[in-house]
Amino acid sequence: MKVYKDKVDEAVEFLRQRTAFAPEIILVLGTGLSGLGEKIEAEVVLPYEDIPNFPHSTVTSHAGNLILGILCGKRVAVLQGRFHYYEGYSSREITFPIRVLALLGAKTIIVSNAAGGLNPAYAPGTLMVFEDHLNFIPDNPLRGPNIEEWGPRFPDFSQTYDRQMIELTMACAARLKLAHVERGVYVAIPGPSLETPAETRYLRSCGADAVGMSTVPEVIVAVHAGLKVLGISVVSNVNDPDNFKPIILEEIIAETKKAEARFLSLLLEVLPAI
Image 1: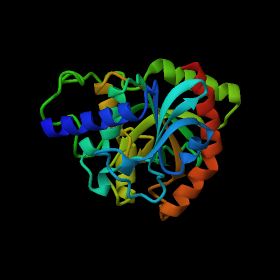
Image 2: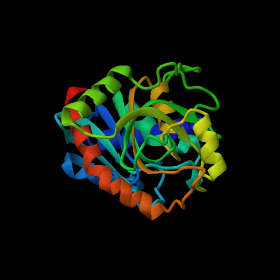
Image 3: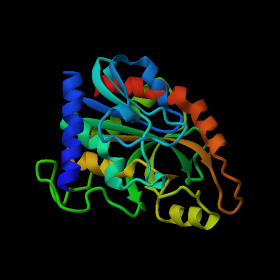
Image 4: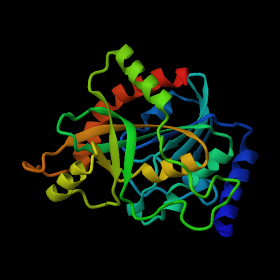
């Protein structure tokens, strides 16, 4: 753990030497959602590989940049793309950027992703605001010795997602007259294999409304670090386990791109009000 802490401290010190910019809000942009980067008044743009000890994204749909700048009057740190358990990283490696940015002063995190719909009431393009999550990724980023200055040994997850930000997001969606904005439960699975019909049926029976291969490890570290959390999934497809259709990654990315404008309009409405 000392080695991991040293790596985090090295990345924090590197960023402090590069800029005096201190982010208020972390934005994690998932598959097909990196277009927000174009709207930021950027002070610093750094490819992940330029930051000491940052993992390298191997997913082609993830840009792989850290952007520090101003968006909607807020000081933001934007992660254009994330890391996944299925890429071979541990949960601690996946969440390395969140730990670094929390130590730089961030107090709020907004996580986004593309997800598969499990709730039959959802349609492709639905924006699902997280009310809760299920974690089926078999590795917890807090496993091992706890570093007390980072957070408590046993953090409370009774209200993982900030209730005020959930209500704010739903109110913003209503003000924008956005259709297909729902509250729901997200489940994280390890991947990279996509769900079978039987797994889809099981996950639905567990109470999940959408499924993906990311996000929850980042949220666990964010809560441990004391950050307020908002999560939004773009539901790219909805599968009926009794009438199952092939799930094609390229189609998921294409559907997410179609919904990106709605996602960005909602985010740009929410940010100034946080």
